Image (cartoon, rainbow, N blue to C red):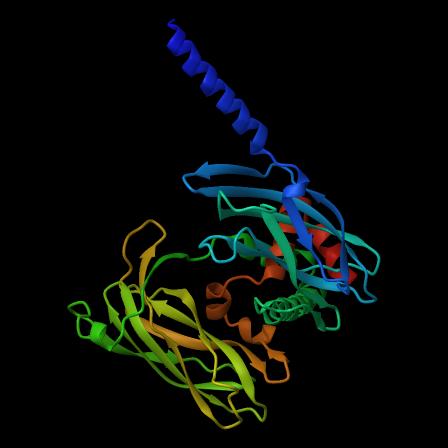
Length: 377
């Protein structure tokens, strides 16, 4: 082997060793920022198998980190959300981690796993990753944190769904025994109808004129849920084959309280009459939606649907229903379990976070573990 080749190989080996040495960083590259008055404290941080990989002028951070936090407050913690930042302005430079379904007593510790991939400029100084507290939800539904990610609303919905679903499972247990609970959990674990969705950018009025040949307006059927504070008045969208555009749903606040946020789930029907959950349309009224007032929830993006195998789905019809509403005072409405017992909705709407958690306990530890879990709270 020539001297030149030996030199090149030596340089390559040295570079490889340097990469390997720097692939796993020390915990000092991870910074956890908690306010002084935060109800949680960092007990331990493990950088774990986290690695960084250079790609041109950027670093790809493959995070597999475990934090152990301690509850410093006087109330049980039900959920927590952390903001994970490598570089805020960089696309792909930040993400979040939420942990619902907790029941952490004062003084106890609990783990938070961070498994993410982020981007960051290679030349940027300082810690590779910073974790910040966005919010903590307590058992009385009070909240602490800046709530930059709307985590208060999200975690409150998860907690209300958890309480609803646990009540319902206890009722099933009392009425039908353990085997009825088993059947319910097996339905959750069974694969539900799923679609692949491709989202295109929203089009303005000029784009409407160039819509695909065969595009036609359709009425969105309005499914009314008993007890919902909002009533769907009418809806419309444009469909063309496997694509939907410009969905519009008009809602009426039939309650006596102002509403500042709501979500509408919409279901699509294919040519065989089968229905699938297509997504949700958020409603954010300017200010609040006063009692008796109307608002328009819109989805301007073009959505293209396909079956899980990739075959395009031809959209024949659409249905909308209200799935949550937030009042101006922060209280949140969700559908009751008896409403969701409608076989059509139970089959189409995704399992709640609590249902998934209990089903996973059943899968890993069996039915007895689920029944013990239901007895806890």
